[in-house]
Length: 472
Image (cartoon, rainbow, N blue to C red; front, side):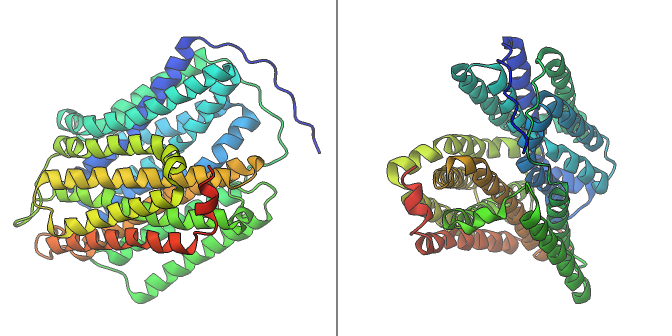
């Protein structure tokens, strides 16, 4: 067994280096979120259904779910700066491809490549921790995280004005240009960090199998619920493919010397209970996140608002702010009031909000308030679960446990988005092709019912994650 190499003392870095890293995070956050308010526009411009449009946002999540668990390992093994620069080259290629995309397949490929941006945060944290003293590194990590979150708000606000001034291609082009410029600045200003000799290998088969299983599932859901549908035999074949890929991934993870997700961690009740709750919470929130922009953008007979991309961005901004705030206070709230209480309140708020939307969706403020409440409840709940799971395992297993929860969170959001899109596709008006009002009502009702499962799961799991999490 090889001995770990003791790293040399950190090389002090100047403020310009941290500034470049922070602006890079800002540009990445912007690129990640420009799609959200622009989905109705993209569907019209590309002539695709809501289900196909949902793949545009889900493509980033699919790649992110695969990249998130391995990015930090790559940075430790090869050096954070080297991996970050190469990862940003992939993201930049995806952004330029999306900016030049003539059709949906090319745009989806660009989005898949952009999903590599998820690995930028752990790599940035590696660089900050290696090159700054402990006290300053905490400030540096906080700055990078805050700017990434701020970039999400910038993307939500600027997608519309950019699309109106330059076309939707510009939404991808401008943030990508900023990413390229800041990546060059980081490459020039940031000192090289030495790699750490590690005992593990990167689980590439696991990455490929998980990505394939998620992509096949999303594509199958779109095709099965689309206007033309799929014959039962084709649906069965897709189900077999998804099951085979998922089974292969589980088999690889169980035998890998250093799996991307250590499935043995799921044997701990606190972790699999947290995963169950995270799936429920994020699936419901993913549905809300997709349904509301669609309802803002559609202009049906007596429902919808026909809002443009700029207005949709403004309507979504309060929800983005609420989500950012709730992410930052989730752990504190759980320590103060207890994890079980936080989860129950969040479930009640989300379920009640969705049920209210079944009959109250005729004014913009109703949807804006609903998005803010849902984002707050989901953010507090998932962050509380993340911190609770981290403290329910041994210190050496913290990274494994949290990465498992992060992957579960991404999968839940993607699943919710695709389910909501399938509901809208199934309820589309055969004459206009637009989602009917009853389809939105059904979507809100299903999202509320999914959220209402949380108290049941909490009751079943109260002997593990809720009690252990309360000691966080």
